[in-house]
Length: 261
Image 1 (cartoon, rainbow, N blue to C red):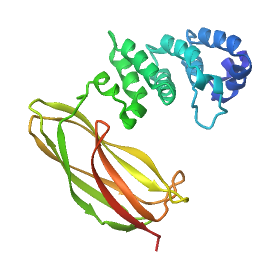
Image 2 (image 1 turned 90 degrees about the horizontal axis):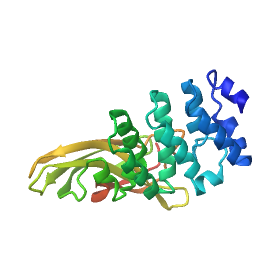
Image 3 (image 1 turned 45 degrees about the vertical axis):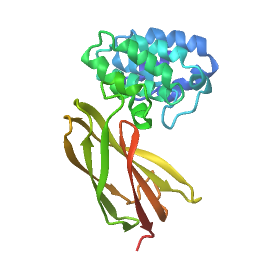
Image 4 (image 1 turned 180 degrees about the horizontal axis):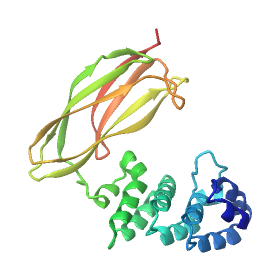
């Protein structure tokens, strides 16, 4: 691990540190805690990134997923790090933990927001992005959004309603406030993608953050491409799109996807 500390300013070392965390957790975390005060931002970032429970393309460390207590102790020492490089890792680490321990992460974020700097508020916002997408009820007030929005959403156009793999569909819809006060809202859309088995899986896409005045009506639109990419394969079938306001499904539309030409 001392060698990894020396090498990490030159190239990534978060994958290499994980076997030590898995086999010698107490000794490894004692050293990682020391690294949170290292003069090098690369070493401080390694302390967070190496301990991420859901580090992409990395070997899983089940103990970190089951009990993130030692990871949270690391992140608490890094929450006001002067380097954005480190703070981004802290936010991503918290976002990983939130997938299995949402309320614990929300407790941490609430504590961190007390007297928080702009930089720390950014960490909280970035760390709760999965909770926003899943519509966790505690996240809205935490981030300053209206907890129970009063709105009416109606679909105006879906064009075209039948597409082929590789094509694009556009939606426009009307968002009307039914409240007597201004509301701060997160508007997203979710797509239920048909899988090879014929079942469907849901994915939420970011759309817009809006502040809407009492009784105001606004028009919104979005486009979705059915062009295949390396991380997604499309299959023919009926795809449902949901339009969400602060995590609540307010309207739905269906698109028939046909095979490519």
